[in-house]
Length: 529
Image 1 (cartoon, rainbow, N blue to C red):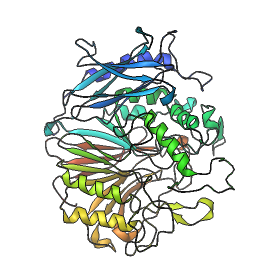
Image 2: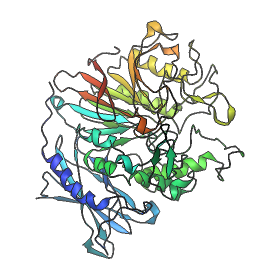
Image 3: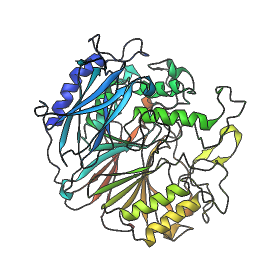
Image 4: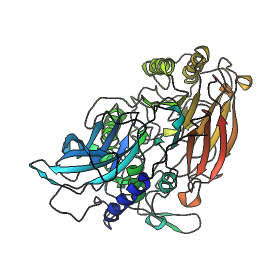
């Protein structure tokens, strides 16, 4: 049985932030930022976020409405007695007035209460209304256990913030589970998906969206990419969730453009884009991504950095965050017999092998932004290419499968225990068990891959399986029609609960209201299962 300590202050700090959030309601002219009534001082109407929390550190994020100095205060109590003060960066137009402050030397396995103040750079005594948040640092004692959630795909296929439905309600269901953190597996925005004021529903009804100028077209400029990230923060539910639950964030294709890869040039026939270089778009998107999320390997406003990283969460868990976009080769039919670059790139593959070997955590969650054995086609511009790993041929590994085969072989021969794959991307939820006895490639140990999402996007039928690594779909819930709106259901998130006593890892696939659809318990200390 898990020995997670109770944290009664977490709920009450939310009540405090809810009081602040009452002033943050999306205004009628939704392109404007949520705002406090306080005037003449810097305002943090976009809320706060924490990210990449470890046993003794974490990142805190905020956005100001004007130039300001970021200040973070932390305390063990909501009263902020004996508060510790952290002086963060000066926020300005170079980072779209966003900033992140790294907190170090925090007590382990404890509830951290924090509040962000924004100070006038010319008069530090003039500060805006403090915005509170909270998170738990990772435990150093195994017995405390770990619980986290994962999903992906937000505001996709034109389904945005619908005030008639209460916005992104799935975040309230996730917050009710009081997780240690949330892993967002990519497609945090749909930079290539404009949001219109209304959309027709199959039953004759109308879906209404909050709209903004930046979401009226595909994102090309840095300002438009930034506006895509701001759009989601117009949602009250998401801002409340961010104040309660820290994140581990990765990206996939829609942060830039559907099915993108390095070196891609957009066809002249795609008149939505005046900027045809995907590399240019990706650089702008990456900069905005680093500005709007607290990611330990990215700095706001920086042109360099990386998304792939390991976030260590105490003795029970290491999270290996992959980047299956930045280093991949071009999308092709995937039939080549040699492919050293693959979907990860040679350098990232070496990094992943090295870090997996070094890990002493009981469980090693591999956070992939794309699935392994599900066929994800790329029919952009009429070509029958492959977007993910599997290319539909159930025989020996070809194309990007070669790189995954190398990794799976490495895990087996190095006897690396406790690997579990989590992903999103395909807009349905499922559980796949990979077994060498069913596979064309057999030099690996059995493993599980769990799929969740979308958070708020169109839902799609289940993807076809590729037999190369012997997957069996043990569970799936997906619509039979394509692009089913969130009003039609099929919105999902997953839960991982690691028991501090037994070390068992329990995966639960859940619907948007929290209903459990499927449960699987995995035992610790095994190379494969």
